[in-house]
Length: 280
Length: 298
Image (cartoon, rainbow over all chains, first blue to last red; front, side, top):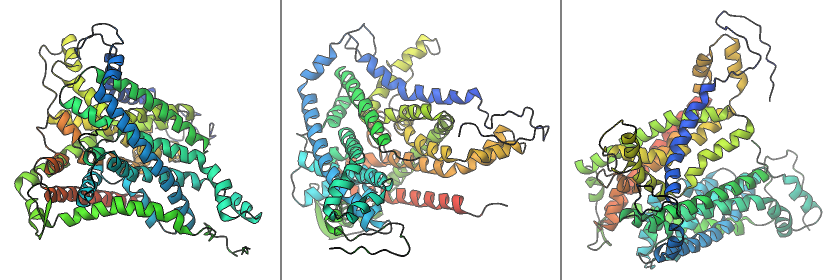
């Protein structure tokens, strides 16, 4: 991996001015576009984080350091209601998705041949959110189901299930089937084998899938926008109306907290999936 | 109890009839049929009926909704969306390719860090990232302040609420989705191929052009799909960063549902969008397959 001894016949061609022992020559300049890309990706976020500590109400003038926006954020009833709603929705959708997704993944892995059911189960992850949002709105309206948090939970459960299924399937592909077989050969029943052998091995994948589902649900805007009642906005919907109708610097503080939560979650999920020993 | 039978040829995957498949597959499948297949099917059904007066539907069969798509106004919006999403995709490819290439060349430890650094912004709330660009592009915003501070301009430039701002916003949202599949395809490449090229006297640039670049085209196509599809149906950025002046298909759909109260036509637009995206994906898959399995030039 590290040192490939390539049998280079030196100076085969005069086109090759220096035959280096290192097979792949990496010019330093290759990192420049990467750094520029990072500047592009992080500058906007950085501005928001910095301005969350601004003493002034003006979003475009720095007036010194202050923590005033953080307490104001927690005193803002709209934002707190949105946060509460978002957590309820994310918890509900994650619960649905974790159970259904794990069962689906196991069923697909063990009982299906061909990819039709697998494709169907993962389709919501690819389907445009706009289509799913208006489709569900149409369905709820036709079935006379009143909109509220329950309808958002059902809607979020759809794409969340797809992600949990995909991650658990990936984890399952790396499992050693002989463990299950050994358990069966030693006389454990199918259910007991599933509970005692399969499930514990899948646990890291299930947790990573649940984390991902939870994070996605917290951030999801379009589907929630179409499937919730105006009186029950989730946090992204609250932010959306704030951005539309005049922003207070509280949004900066909120953004900073959400950013921290995302960072912690992503790193946790990354560690978990590494624990699962996914072979590259 | 159960007799274990030993198959002569070990199957790739043992299908054991220990637990019936029904308890595993049924709950999830029923759920997805109810809340994914049924809603989409319902939308398709709605496209052939008349609108109700207050957002409902009247069950009178008609082709009017599909005919309406041919009106110049709607054709214009659809073409404009394709152009904008296309520009975003192209820019993402031009910026994302060098990034993915650089990451693939890092040591394994730094690779993970660099990848997480690409993905992290994507995990930041979508609306907050949109709002960040409002702070940057506003007339009194930070970009204008810096430009004037550096003496490049002496008056604010109107950047927000333009089609260009929409492109920047969409590019910012979906750039990570371009980098990931590109990186995956680049790091799978067998380094000995490039070595062989350089040993045979190719310059690094030529080795890249004749070996690395062609082999990474499937990854690039996947990245293009990952960017084009969400960019095409986004309605938040055209509204918040574009100021609602430049309408894309997504905005039209949203307006049909919440303002015009014409659900059947909204459903038709959304389905047209989906059909377009499916066509794009099918073409991309076919091209990728041709490239990876096609006859090699001897």
